[in-house]
Length: 203
Image (cartoon, rainbow, N blue to C red; front, side, top):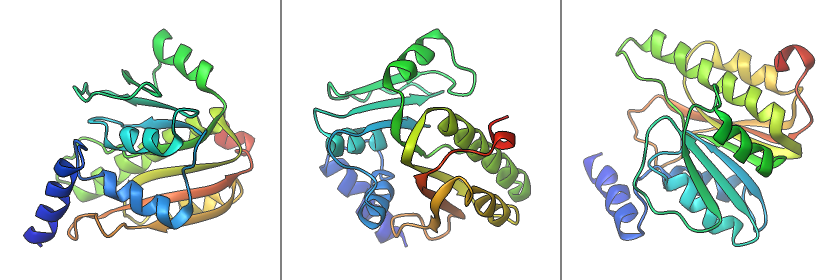
């Protein structure tokens, strides 16, 4: 197990990514064809910036990526990517202005996680709440046919939530990338082909 962790850690350093989490997005991109040149991407929980960097590389000069996180990062980003230290769910004028210029977006990705308490039930509930907030935000800015990816801690309420997403997307999948730590109880919810949120979900 330690060898597996070392592999992804060292690979990230060799490839100039600040965190090993980049390979989770890379695996999901390979499986679900999430990114291509010219897309506009919103990255929630972006620090330290690996997902933003990978997305910026895949969308190329004609695409745009906006990353936002409560935490700061000293990662250097290319010209087609912007990082803001802000609360995406309580947006100040700077984030709101950037999102207005970017929208509608083709893809919303979220690697957000709550501050863990060590109480699994509590952590799961808080994780799902973040995903619900991410989906609500995606519903306000995602283009018809766009995609949504969010990390969630596995728990008894996740299936009901993914089932509820089926009315908003053509397909809803779950995945645990090989690069996730084996002991982690995270998984990713992938919504493909956005159709629009039901009115009660938007509220």
